[in-house]
Amino acid sequence: MEQDKNRVSSGISFVFINTGMESQDNEKPIYAIGEVAGKLGISVETIRLYERQGLIIISKSAKGQRVYSESDIERLTCIRTAINELKISIEGIRRMQSMVPCWSHIHCPEDQREECPAFLRASGGCWTYKHAENECAALDCRSCKVYLLSGTCENIKTLIYKDILPQPGNHRQQEDEL
Image (tube, rainbow, N blue to C red; front, top):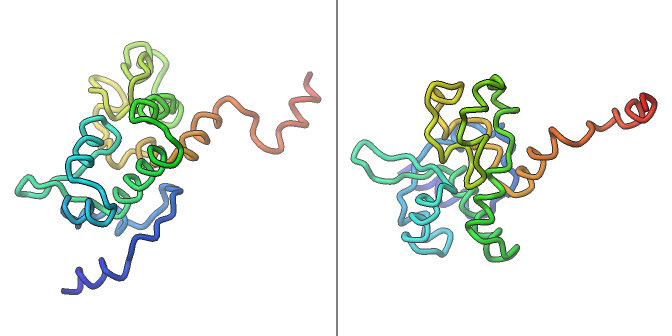
């Protein structure tokens, strides 16, 4: 009963910026797929499509049923916003997620990048590939920093530009060096 009370009071007012610093409660899967579909006004099959396309990694209960956390709902809301309001296709979202330089955030060695499908291809986020014998092989993609931070288009842009744009405050120093 207490759990249901918390669900109702949480509502559907989501913040579309996932900082990766949310409490563990945000990551606790407690919602069934039907509940999530109802909250978002979409079909269960649409949620399953996003899962098949690698846009979201879901948890499964001991009985094998899909269960979702508040963070999952935020991610799904962002996906819906990107598709409906920004007119970005599922393939466009996948391509943007593939541009996140995961190797920079995970700090994998350069020799591993030469073999890594996430480094070599641009068809989905690094969590959509099988990783063998590298830094990511032992990681749980669902709790990986790259996956958590790539939940919104704004964060994806930040993650991509972080490695190619000068850091604030360093611009004057870089001009002086020229």
